[in-house]
Amino acid sequence: MDRRLFLKALTGTACSAAAHPLMTTVTLAGSNGAAPLGDHRLVVVILRGAMDGLDLVRPSGDPLLAAYRPNLVAIPGPDLTGYFSLNPRLSGLMPMWRAGQLGFVQATSTPYRNQRSHFEGQDILEAGTGLDLPDGRVRDGWLNRMLQAVPGLTSQTAFAVGGEAAPLLQGAAPVSNWQPDLRLDLSAQSRLLLDHIYHDDALFREAATEAVSLTESMDSTRMSDGTAPPPSDDRRLADTTRLIDFAADRLREDTRIAAFSLSGWDTHRNQTGSITLPLRRLEHMVLRLQDRLGAEVWGKTLLLAMTEFGRTVAENGTKGTDHGTGGAMLLAGGALKGGRVMGPWPGLDEAALYQRRDLMPTSDVRAWAAWAMRGLYGLDRSLLETAVFPGLSLGDDPGLLA
Image (cartoon, rainbow, N blue to C red; front, side, top):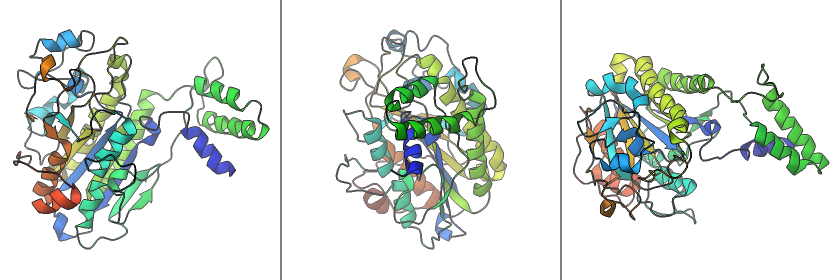
């Protein structure tokens, strides 16, 4: 076995690939002056781990919410519409809401149903189809298929930034790669597990020891038990800042499309605590992007943040939520006609829930993305419904742009 490949695989298996912060990526696509993309910017954020849309934008006007979630809504957030309120950890976005540069879609989902697998859900979200894809019938992402319709692409048109290319941008359109320095974080429990697994195998034990040493060498301070401290919230925010700044610097120039991944949204336990850092990172990302782009470029930018599926309406016995169906999207940017919570609202009555447990989806995530691209870049409706999002019916124009 190749030693380098083993070390890479070893550190990857110490955590969930669907939700680990080291899987964070940024993907960039630039017009290089090509007329079809014009002067607008589109930023797509994949929130990996199934973000709880009912915690992001709370239907606080419905008394059933507190009955379903007595522990998750104990701290109220700022009012948005008189019915919906914002999670209090996103209060820093309220000036953007009042300026009409922030909006939300509630009760939205891909066509994926019932299995509730992170990996399948993310595959379908990024492929832009309604199909389960065991045979690989669709191998490219919907953002790449959009780029395939744009003439004059070069090797510099698209950049995948991070550990690997985002499936959202995989396909025939050219993609270049830029990888920032990444830290490898193994918990004390992960180190102990590796010790037990490889104790009796000299070759693998040596490689595992080297992998742990690599992670420990990246931390200058030690805890009292000799293990490396876990990554701090500030450090993870700093890592997010690096990715945002890299993207923003290019969006101020010829780049027209950026795609990020932010993970950590799988909140099965202690959701009030475990969702805090992901929400901080999301708020920080939006505010930092606005600041770094400046008023002129921000005024031409639309950001879409979406997730593979939502979470159960009722909290579980560990004060978290389990995998669900209908979720939410966050939209931001100076190009947005915001200050709205969009999408038909199905209500929280048990009979109105999907399988009497999940928020009922009333719109398709793909349609919101398609209308964004049509509004920003004037893409043909038939192209969006057949090539970019096969089988999608766009429906009526929701008027996303200011």
